[in-house]
Length: 278
Image (cartoon, rainbow, N blue to C red; front, side, top):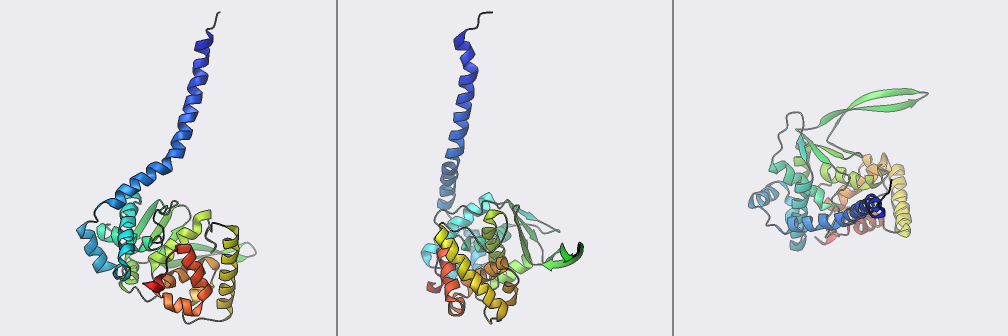
């Protein structure tokens, strides 16, 4: 049988073109995503959403005008990209979406073009505190199963779970240092490596080492000496320390800066904002 060399080359050429197309698509995806997000951020912010912010998220009114505008753009992207699912009979409306999105996006304020919690696939909303079963090793191969009622939880595989009643309570008082949404989304930032360990990604090794030193020393100090500003829950583990001081950073920045100035500086570098100036 005589084979035409040109026809024999077509399958190889088609394979090469398919590979090149795939590579081009992967490389161009961030550009397409950012273009879509730019259009979403540029849309007029719905008046009904403005009313929700005024009624439910008084922290927004404390922000400088430029950051308020940036926050609204981030909210529009967040709501467009992240599914909200009601649980235990909880209906999900714009009030739930906008309130939660506004608080979650406070952590992104310092970034003009954030990645919007890339590991997060959905937000689950319960009416109030929800019950989870936790298995705790007791040593010697023995485990203890304990039921706990939680206000919120961040899962490394792409979910944040929130109790709506706790969300409302945290949003209503923007200066008490307690906000379940800020807490759980700080965990999401911390889970950039798949596990929360109190060491979110830093752009250089030097910054990572300084973060570890400052936060490690502050955590150890809290374990040895209770603080009137940083609550005792922060002393349970480094991941909780990071989440708790993040709540304080956005809601009680002066108290945190006075109590732990080095911690405040590290958080200001991480979040790229300075709530002391608001």
